[in-house]
Length: 563
Ligand code: ATP
Ligand code: MG
Image (cartoon, rainbow, N blue to C red):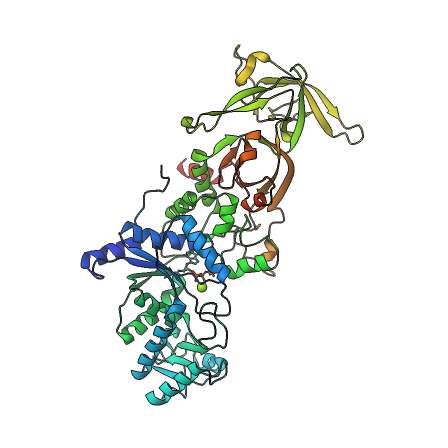
């Protein structure tokens, strides 16, 4: 059964439908996902992946994976591998179309030579500061570079010598010859090539000139036969330049289309900021379960279905907005509610002795695996004289509206029996409650009372002798503020949530969970959805991450809107 929401329409689909109707690209739909391998992918990238691969799928087209690796100093092989793993895990395939902008360095060089020959590019000797000063402002036109009138021959000679490594870094650039008075600053003779004597992770020392993003991107799209080049809104002002290069070269011309990037409350999304969190040790790594990275969400227990559903639900629009992180959590709950197996786990154990239960007896009592899906049947859980319940589920002096266990009070143990508290044993020195003594009613086996007697609370529990001990991590938002960049002083690290991770040890979980494996989905009754931490479990410890608590603040918001 698929949980994916039925695809809804949006302006990009309308454009594609129109192009299919007019035969603009001979009925082809070919998109690409072009990450720069300078960090791990985050949930914003998931939106772009779902959009690009999703459109290709919906229209019977193709989507390429292209590593936009034009910047030799910041890119690493580790990132390339993680990106591939994340796209695959999300459920998409690029088949054999794994491309790298660096594969096109020679093509891009040849295109640049063509532009020089056409008189549309020139070698400029201004320094970076001078280029900036000559560029002008939004209100004032720029000034032409004194090198703009070099002859084609001179430009060809200098450009080939730039490539040969004859000139020092930063001494010269290749620029497009467009219009220094253009109202769009991106069109004021933008830089196409820089000299950079750096080793590249794929091309090694072969090149010492590197193309700019603006120059490389459109030509790479064109070489791959892309039809719809989908990018985020900040590239809207770059579209005239994208079009200019393709028109000047007279090659296949994809359509650039911009959409709004995803922002989420209580987190940061740019790779630069995420890198800072990793490098400065605010989190344990890119895959820390509190990170908005795909690897972090996966480790936390998110499913690809939940992420795809989220991306469908947020839609595709033309204006930037911030999405409530509660919606993301809601999508996970919706998926897990149907799929996760219910189990019992006691996070903060309090010992309970059932005085009238035979010391040697262990009963196996049937418990429902998933009330949303009865076909998943039942499992047996052991019941015996000594059990654990949650510390929070007992109050010696219960306030009003506390209906759980208290001295003299009867409650139900889920799938077990009714028990009544008859005694409290405390530590003589500290006064801390050590254990409870209770009696059980043998007539209430399975948690039903034959005489119709009512109790106001049902508690989860685990039998002490058979329980497995585990570590459990509870998470909260990584930041205290909905928009962490909104700080008065310092930066977003000032508003990190000091309680975003709480680690509990000595938790008692039902014995069947000894065989839990990463990727298995559980609901710990009354506590939330959990899954085994894949990293820690490799070290041989049972550590569960709470993917999301049960309380659904999004559903509440939705409900109040309807009322
Ligand atoms: P960041 O700002 O996080 O560093 P980026 O845009 O530099 O992101 P790239 O690796 O260049 O990251 O992005 C690959 C693709 O993913 C691009 O097409 C980009 O537009 C898209 N993308 C990146 N961030 C988001 C986001 N928050 N929402 C939607 N799409 C995004
Ligand atoms: Mg980028």
